[in-house]
Image (cartoon, rainbow, N blue to C red; front, side):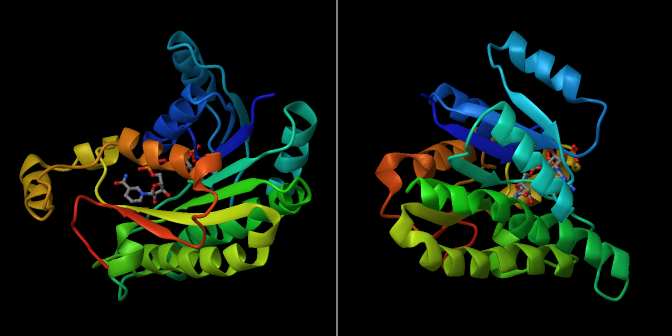
Length: 244
Ligand code: NDP
């Protein structure tokens, strides 16, 4: 039977590529979204391209909603083997201008979510002696970024979470890793002014943006049986923009 992968925020730029690549690798793919309204169109578009995904509405910042979603997925689809914590938001502004709400929204969505969604799945992964938890962080969680104290703090927090949980579950066949993408050519990045984009690219040694498919490729490798000796790692995928 096909392994089951759940991708939070799978209808976004990087999430869609991850869902598609996992499906191509033979996984049954479940995704979540928070804002209702465009899921039918997304599912129809995916179906046209030959993909059949399961989709559940769930605000990843809401612990109880995540518990309920996990129960529903278990009943409808089965036990999740691969969890990709991909959902995320930004609320950029300098720290002086940042409101408590800007801080809370980003910390809840980008960091609390990792606790909320991992919690209902990890025990069952351990019981079955196999699991892969892949957290999508960011280059800005590694190096910081002007105007992103909230986002950088949340994404950096993922690394501590990853390294700690990896130690707790290692003997049970569950790996926990973080991927830290740099600038990826999603709609958001492509929408910035051309001159700004050129300036960004000038700071990337390989001389281009990354693609969502390149991030997805890494996810699929970390999800595989072959990646069982990689755990607690943070893998940068940033064209050499930040090396550590
Ligand atoms: P998108 O904005 O395209 O996608 C983000 C997804 O997260 C959306 O599908 C959105 O669904 C979902 N989401 C947001 N808030 C919630 C919530 N409260 N509950 C559930 N789902 C939610 O972003 P990207 O594809 O660009 O980014 C994906 C991940 O990669 C993020 O974690 C981001 O921080 C990270 N990243 C992206 C980079 C880039 O260059 N694009 C670089 C480095 C890291 P909905 O619209 O339904 O809310």
